[in-house]
Image 1: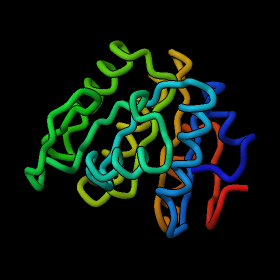
Image 2 (image 1 turned 120 degrees about the vertical axis):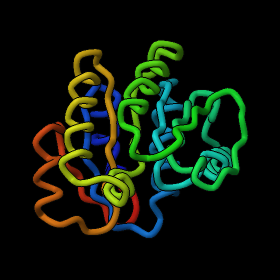
Image 3 (image 1 turned 60 degrees about the vertical axis):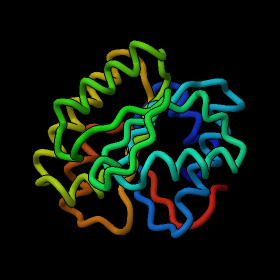
Length: 184
């Protein structure tokens, strides 16, 4: 989640951002970003969530006026609770540790829907389930694939990550953005 329209525009231009977000209002901030990119720019998004279930996110973003028809979710967390809603626009991963399947799901979503950008909410949650080097390796690979097809993105780190974590991810993104409260 980015701090200003210039940073948001970089996603639209095919850049990949790493957003370090220590805000308590990250969903509200993401709604602003999605309204700009999805509603105003007409872009299609792959939204990878390991943080909150698809059902909660879709309902929230819809209530904030985001055109959820252009959001295609990959839910990496809901199968753990077994509270699934099978509907168009969502794919469920069994576990947030299945990076091979996540890679295939992202590729499939991009091929079917011709998505313009990818949101990953959040790398911090993936780090709960898998070692740092495994998570870093996956996102390094996926960011290279995204760059080859000019797909932008925002990889989110919640809270205040350790320097070691930040250094591992900063190497393969175009810009690191620090966000506390609000979008300017």
